[in-house]
Image (cartoon, rainbow, N blue to C red; front, side, top):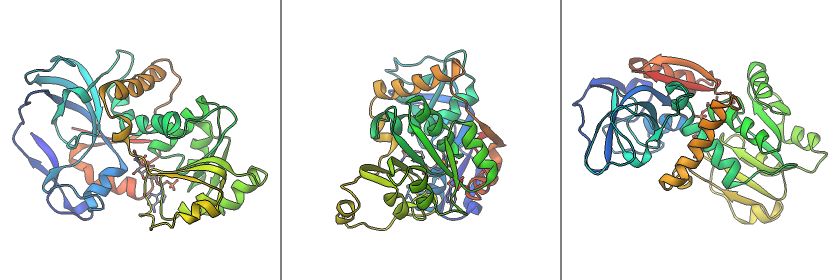
Length: 322
Ligand SMILES: NC(=O)c1ccc[n+]([C@@H]2O[C@H](COP(=O)([O-])OP(=O)(O)OC[C@H]3O[C@@H](n4cnc5c(N)ncnc54)[C@H](OP(=O)(O)O)[C@@H]3O)[C@@H](O)[C@H]2O)c1
């Protein structure tokens, strides 16, 4: 089978489209014939070496397709089931072995591409809004990169929870998409001082929570946007890593809470993962969650997909099609 492999860390040039042996599922595992693989910012961290995978490896953490083989002791899925999954390394491929407990059956009303599109970014938006800081009506949330893959879903789900949402974006086109997703206000943080604008929009009070996936360029000002006892939820670093922080800063800025969550800890077992994924599937089936598939690339062109995402061009989901 064919896969996108990383033999050394670096720019998009390190991505190799290679023939590798078709893997056989072991106990508790299944082999999925992929119809779509999700492209996520974490793939860029793994390719560049910001996150160190054991070389060589197949890139990708998200996919959907059809179960074509199961190993011993698999009760969760059967051959022929349509399934989707996240947080299993190696989905930029024609087939992938996954632990069966991580495979979520896709309901009939949800397309395989939509399922592939929401497993990682959608379950992230779910846990951020329901568990890390459970939003309630009346809360004000600041969402950075609001027209990104996570961003467009996070805005919609935050609105479902009754929050007022302020989104930051880099372009007018993205601002429009964030507003269409439900953002009450949008700020062009590449042109406007978002800290001053958030203070103005909240009459100086600040927000209850900042969902910050941009990191280096937004972190300090994000802390200043919070009201006392507010929650700083740093969940990514698309602009670069945030330097070390003196905990005293949290005191000085208003007894703030700081957390750096990751999806794996919020889909720690099958029940928790199914609850989040099935909520997303139900909202999609009911027409209540708009999953914006921005663009698809053939699997062999994974490098173009990475250029597109790193170049801040993506607006919603990017998929690779084997
Ligand atoms: N912790 C978790 O569990 C978890 C799970 C999923 C994703 N994440 C994180 O969430 C973030 C979003 O992931 P995603 O896959 O949905 O990607 P994405 O938001 O679709 O793409 C990244 C966005 O970040 C913004 N950005 C700001 N400064 C940037 C810079 N210097 N270079 C590139 N982009 C920059 C851009 O939006 P603008 O052009 O509007 O600025 C860009 O479109 C990533 O940081 C990712 O690591 C974390």
